[in-house]
Length: 365
Image (cartoon, rainbow, N blue to C red; front, side):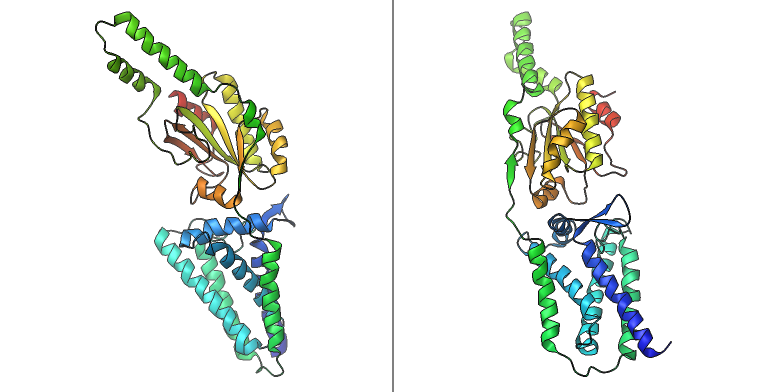
């Protein structure tokens, strides 16, 4: 194989690497597995911002711009590697530079985490890759680029306007494909007809208990002591969960707070299991759901599958991931008692929601 064929082979391989990486960052993953991709640019980019950029210290203001520019540059480099405009002087060095930054970043992340777990985000959710795997991939790519640079001929008739036009078009295309929008929180109309909550019933029961204590032995027991005794029965000391901006009464009594995505099958299964527990136990804690504003039109089908319509809110993607917490994934199910986080289920692996485990924690079986 001559140098020209080798050069084009390397250019195509590395170009595809960058183009696939960029495509992966604007998709949710596979539809019914390979080979169909579920494109959802705003969702995918917002998720990339929260899980990758915000954890690095990027501000909420800067992250949306940086993410779109970065992905746009990945697209541009992929296309420019197939172009003969300043290939040796600009494109190859720029590509090596970007990959070197990725290698340094991933090495730093791996050092801080003390391991090799999680998804580095290089290929989004399309092709999960650990930091070590990504480092190896990037080192190989750098090696191929150095080889390509050595065997490539010097740039001859290059057009700087072609180079800048492709780069700007790719970056602007990302801003058009996934327009930035202000975060919003909306309360579903379903909350207008909520029945009396179990927390309200609990308060009424507690009040009755206090009155009974006063009546039975009012000469020996002070009201303050009776109140303290009741407090011991109703749960731990009052705390602030940090979810009051989602539901104002979330820190009062026992609550189940769920973070669900309307189109997520695992979320639907979790909601169905929670409904079964609520039917089984009349004193089951009140359930409140926070939906991600992604495929919100599927919420009616979600509740149809679950078998019940729970009180719910819909919030934008970035606030949703922020509230769920760093490193956590959907479905998220939180059991709170007086604002104390007693149990937090998330994702579909070792911390995945388990109805029996939740039942055991609530009723101390």
